[in-house]
Length: 312
Length: 278
Ligand SMILES: Nc1ncnc2c1ncn2[C@@H]1O[C@H](COP(=O)(O)OP(=O)(O)O)[C@@H](O)[C@H]1O
Ligand SMILES: [Mg+2]
Image: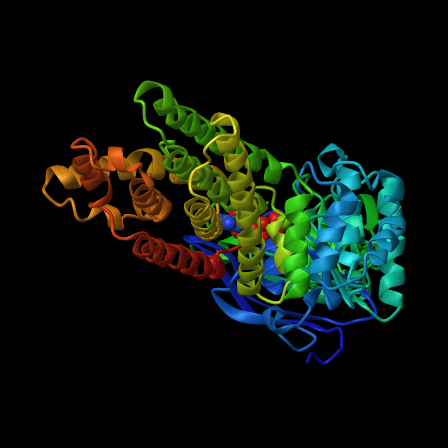
């Protein structure tokens, strides 16, 4: 039997599709009680990782567990984990209700459960329509209804916002948060930090198949120190003076300005005045998660040998 | 397991495929049996034979045999449809193991193959009654024997289809493969083998074995049931020799085909477990 913790563990996971390394030595854990964002640019390996977690793709090496067991060893997995995956679909001529009744039977659930999940995702009135006639948003709702059939403890969603209208996204956000607040686990992937920024508490950021950051989103925010952008008359003199003042993290931007990390405008102005360097303009840049995300996920593809093309 | 089988039945009966594939086999069997019965009854007028020639029997059997192709197709299309429409993801997410899904499909499609066989048998019987004008239905024992073997072969072909679909995965590939092999490749292969003097090999090929189990029984019963005057005629003996000597006895063909069915099911299980669902 599984341990009922709701914990997801990914350990040294690697997957190669022929010459393409989709996931390399990926490790992270996801705890219950919060929404965890699984972030990375397109091609980073998110879908492949989630599918390995769900026993759909065989890892080249490493492994994953849900509630302490690999997916294959969960009995009646639908009651432990529900998943809304990319490219998960429906028979075009089968009605939404019939679709759900097929999988309710497979999981040994009563047919009333079908009506419950239909109502829960707001598809009750469209239940007898063929899934092939559904809009992208309705398909996502039907996929979510399917995932929720077994009232699972763990919910895995792969880019669920794709195809949802803003109203649908807001609804999903609330849903995921209340699901997690009831002590259950939510792992949701996205290639856009902004899309999940307001929903998630924890993040796992991957790029080119490897983990770049794992932890609370809040820590990521804090770790990003603000920068001062300054336009001096004499850049060399100011850099020297800054270095003497202990500010070594100075970058020259393309437009000729200097970016001083880990300082604030007052300190930079004082240093410049003491060094006799005229300042033509100065501006403090606040911590920007999106930029942080881009830094974490781009320009580092070269690290993985043999990765065809590269992401982003 | 019960739940998984129930799920497979629900999948089958919630789309149109099952009756779309059921009708052609049933109608073909009806037409064949009616045609055979009608021609068989002509003898009374033309040849002055006082008895029916039980031609309806082998015609009925070949109708049922042809109909098994649709039982195979419903298995192939049903299983590969899960890959084509990507419902296989959900199927695997709601089941304990891939093999239990395959077993559930085998059980459900075996039952469906049985339904196909029984429907063809009923339609064929109606056809024989219509074709002979209600007079001189062939020997009921022989007729029921063909019904029973025809139903068994329909079940086996449906299982064969499930195994093939699971092994191939790609719907177009599996359907084309099945049609090309059964309708073209095996015939050509048999012709080549016979030309090379290896005429004992073709009965061991899957399509031939699958057909022979019903056809060989039907032909033997047919010649056995012939009116005496015809059976003794110098024309019939060599014909009987040519049609029935080549093939192994019907139940041997059935066992050979069962072997092939187990083989493709095993392949479906092995390949299915390795396959990445991306
Ligand atoms: N079935 C497959 N065959 C070959 N390459 C694949 C397959 N699935 C994914 N990949 C490759 O693996 C990498 C990661 O893909 P994916 O997991 O879909 O990334 P993401 O979901 O983060 O966009 C990509 O380079 C992709 O092309
Ligand atoms: Mg993806």
